[in-house]
Image (cartoon, rainbow, N blue to C red; front, side, top):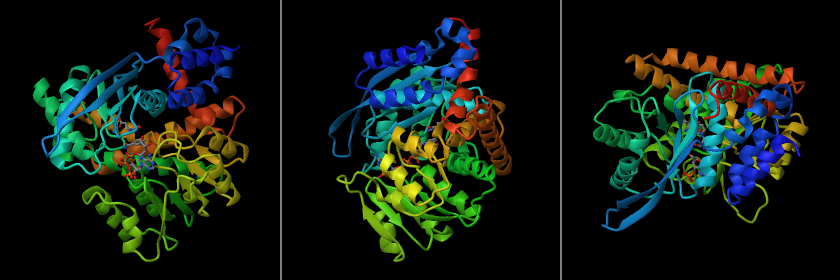
Length: 452
Ligand code: NDP
Ligand code: 2IT
């Protein structure tokens, strides 16, 4: 048995009930064989068996009281997975599905993603099984305060810097920052995604979606193609989906779908700027459902999720580019086959691990340009890194400056993943290229720092 197989067996044996974590680990490990052949010193130093084990996992009780006076208890987590190249960095997810498996998969991916950005950030992730949907602002505030009353002792600007993810946006970051500052009695850049008036960075809200489209633009351009006139399907309608849509429009593409956990809308006329603005207000201010889009715009058709189907009809819409931006495992092998039968050119992951291993296999086999999330959605955390830099410098860069840096970072990640794959004889395989390029920097750092 090879070393990566041995390590994978031991991961599964230790935590048999963590399927998402297994999926994320195998996706990286299966790329590493040729690297380990070239670097036996990594095997000697136990890099692979150490890299799959979180440095620290924190789990805690989060009690809070709702508007009616009822007491609730949620679970809070922070996974400090790998700090070899910088303070732990990664988002917080508030969603009822959150558990150790989901957060370990996300924190593990974050190690390689953060490495690819070229910025000094380790890998971490956290969150809670709290569901912000249907909660009042006061309830969300009390929950965030209770969550931070435990988390604050484990984080810090030079130790661990959380940010947003599903269910955690500007409102939640604000409440958590307020409580951290009160407890620590220090004003420091301990969270990113902060409001512009208290240390946030311009472009951070836009960064994941914009960065995704910059990466897809690079991938298309390497094949002499572009977004101009392209039909694009996007899933999700949250932070990543909204700003991916905005940047697709900037580059001359036509966005024809958006979704949420209830279903998706297909608008053959295209979701133009005015319609997108309406969606942003619906989702960010009114906290409504995407089904309302079809009531507002008669050109659109709404399809509710049907759990009996073996595929998601969103991915049967005929498009040139598909950008899954909602959640993990939302696009399976059947969906990938449907996209391929409609001659899709490129698929770029805005969400973390939205494509199942079967779907990825289809895309690679059929030579569809495929961008794995750890490369293509890295613009969010990269701009978080830029927010940390600005906080340390105690100054703010302009919108143009941050956007330019974000663009440069995405161009570099694309180049690095492309060239690494080419060097190992796997030209065009961005999954392999991103895994290996991300891994090498971590492995070198772990090697230099000894067995810790
Ligand atoms: P938001 O909470 O802003 O939006 C999430 C969107 O995805 C919503 O439309 C939501 O619908 C939908 N969604 C969530 N869970 C499910 C589900 N189980 N099934 C179907 N749809 C679902 O989150 P973000 O936009 O920030 O995050 C989206 C993805 O991007 C996640 O995978 C996240 O990890 C990843 N990501 C986020 C980054 C960021 O900077 N925010 C950076 C890099 C990656 P509903 O409202 O019905 O729940
Ligand atoms: O998955 C991700 O990269 C994020 N949710 C963003 C993390 C961050 O620290 O900005």
